[in-house]
Image (cartoon, rainbow, N blue to C red; front, side, top):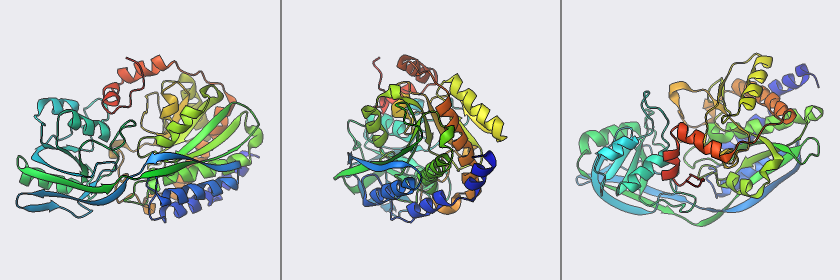
Length: 440
C-alpha cells in the first residue's frame, strides 16, 4: 500500500472516532466497574475488525465506588456540591478534623517547613515554573501522610469550578490511609481566605468492594516471537467522559490497527495492541501483563496516553538514543514537528515494562503550561477532542509503529534506569509513593 493510500484512508476513517463516541457515552469507565467492562468489550470488538485473536484477559482489582463528600467548618458546611469537592478515588471512607494548613504548591520543602501533625493539609495540583520537576498528586498525598496529617485536600490550579480527581493508595495498600478530596480552584481560594488556621472537617463516604478489570488484546503481522506493543488505557475516572484521558488514545490504537492491517507486509515483527484496564488506579492492568511476559520478547512499546490534547506530539524515549533517532526520522519523513524528550516518564502503562529496561516510547501531546488541563475533571469531554488532530497524530504513530518493528533496540540495564530517575529528581517521589522497585 502506498503512502497516498494508507494516509488517505486514515484521514477519512471514522473507526476510532466511532469507538470514542461509544466510550464517552457510557455512564463511566471507573476501574472495576460495569462501564469499564463494556468499554473493554467495545474496544476488543473494534480491534477484531482489523486484527487477529481479539480477546479480553481479566484480573482482580481493588474496587472503589463513590459516595458523598463534604468539607465543613464550625460555622457549617463550606463545600458539598460536586462542582466544589469530590473524594479522590481510593480514599478511605472516613471523617477527620484538624486545623487547615494551606501549603500552596505542596513542594517537599513546604511539608518540611510546616507542622502538619493532626492537621488538614491543602496543596495545589501544579508546581511553579521555576521548580525542577513535576510533583505527582500521590507524592503530595503521601508527604501529607508521612507528616501526620489528618486529611488531604487537593486544590485544582485550573479555574472553572472543576475539582480534580485522581487516585491515592499504593500497590501494597490500594486504599489510602487518610481521607482525601479534590476541590475546585475557587473553592480552595475561599478555604484559604476564610478558614486558614481554623478547624475543618473532611468527610468521605465510599465503598471498596472486590472487583475485576480486564485488558483488551489483538495482534497482527508476521508470526515472530518478538513483538512491538501498541497500547493505551480504556478506563477513566467516574466524574467525566474521559474523552482525552484516555478515550482518544484508545481510539488511536484502533486507527493504528486499521492502518497496519493494510501494511502488514511492511512489518518486521508481530504487533500486539493492548488497551489496559485499571491504569488510573496504579497501572494495575499493565503491571499484570509486565509480570506475565518475557521482556526479552518485547522489542519496544508505543504507549498512547495523553495524545490529541495538543496538535504537536511529545515523545518520551527514556534515555534511548536509538528510539529518539527513530522518532526524529519519522517526524522528518512526514514533515511534522514533534518534541522528543529523553527523560523518564513513570506515570503510564509503558512504565511497568520500561522500569526494567524494555525500550518504550510514551506518546502524549505538547501542552506547555496547561499541563493536564481539562484532564481528571468534569470537563474532560468529547467536545475538547479535535478530529483533525487525532487523524494527524495517528499517521505519525502508525509510521512510528512500523519503524519500531524494523530496528532492534537495546534493553537498558535497570540500574541505569534507576540512576536516570535519581538524576532527574523523581526517585524521592517514587519512594514515598511506594513505586520504587529497585533495591537501594
